[in-house]
Length: 336
Image 1 (cartoon, rainbow, N blue to C red):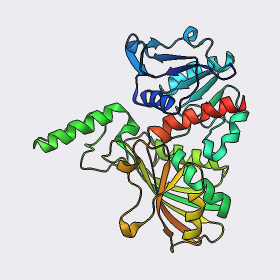
Image 2: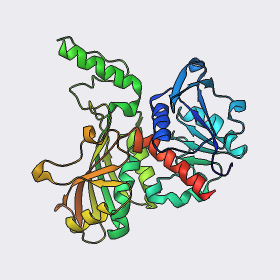
Image 3: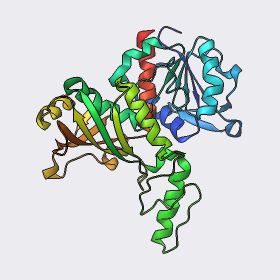
């Protein structure tokens, strides 16, 4: 790898996740000597903007990944499966935003604020966690370090953009149809999302959604708590950007809410917004565009021993995906 200015590629440059990676690379002034914008063959020849320049998108192929030091994958598991090992074999580092490698014991699953040291253990591939697991682990890790974490219960409120641009477009059309007095339709999602909340839309694994399975597995791995009891229901809501979660934790030792608040205020990557009497608490609209995990409604849960309740919100496209991946790449450079 070049000392300070790596050659970088972005696979999936034309998608919602990829375009956010481009913005985050700009915002964080990520050092690079070259950026290759890659996507599927149907996007070849289109352009994307990066640092006021127009980059022509090329179809991803082994030859176009040759010589790359860091490659961001934002194009789905099949693409990552096919090409990430080639990057690793060529001496580069693949930072994969798909779920394909997340539970591979040979591949570090990394959130820099939680277990950034795991970057040192990579063998050419580093997995970026799920867009719910990332903010949850950022909020839970400092509480676990201070008080011990015994059990976790979560209800999520996940934005349309978590399912990609097609659902965002469908939601927008539904909003217009309802405003015009027309019956809204749906094709991408199993139900009309506007004016609705949907406890599904993901593939099912028995009684659990694919999303629920991912979050449970990944939070356990990120916190190094393989036996952590976790109950979760994932829900899609008619919000464009910003995943929220109502969280209840049972801790090993008693935690006064004020003490928990101080712990969270001093933790990296967290912004505490917690004055309910003044109607100050995290919301998706307020968090959109932010790279911090916002935490509020921190209070006792008297229904369980050493229980706390809190509300966690993050921009799912940034900290829930792109920002975390870029932070991982920054650690790759730091630890090289």
